[in-house]
Length: 293
Image (cartoon, rainbow, N blue to C red; front, side, top):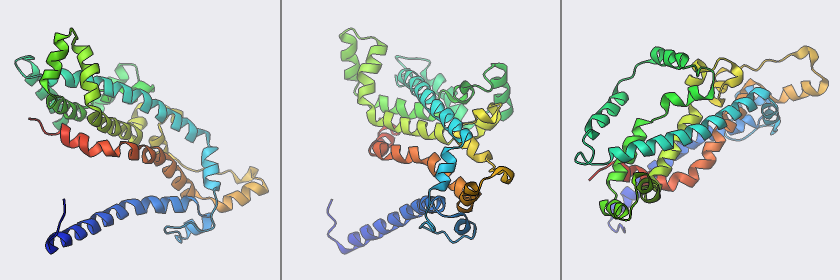
């Protein structure tokens, strides 16, 4: 679209300036964290670091990557993301597919839909959830972080509305050719729903990666904490009695602040790398899946 009038051009420039300013406000904290992680202990402690490292060094990253608890928590998070995303996506697909049918084909559709909507508006609370996890015997296992949120209702609503926008003739043609519901779902609906699935997949990955509170209450040992729970509780303890001269020189370059900054950046890095590849699907998936005909 070409804007030829002066007011429209002014609006476009103002809009671009405002959005650029908002984007800059989102990026600057990440740049600051990155700069602190590459700075020396003295500069970070004195608050001299802004958006560029002072006394550049990578000792904080060497210290973090050599920490056993950090690597263990990272592996727990990777395990959670891998299993959790697979479980969430599968259950979202097989739940959204029948709920996308009209009431003539699935008479109980409205009942199930409202039942799921109620779970968004009202929650049983943390204590009942903790008791359920404990009584089912999954406390302290990876399933305690996955099964309580195995069916994300928001994603189900997003996907079922996307399914309802697909042409019904495609499904009817598949049934005429002898396909069943599962074949129709995975051979017709899934390939046509890649924008919505990419959006849901990104939301699911971010949700599992950033979750920290459930790790604190469901995992019995800090060795089983996911990454974000570990970052919430980390305390850097140092034993100066057994340090060598080289260790003392290293400690002059790192501090609690630089180490935590390095951990925060490493914790956010996978999502920062993943998002650009799925970003092009994000807006399309949201707009197409949020409005039904």
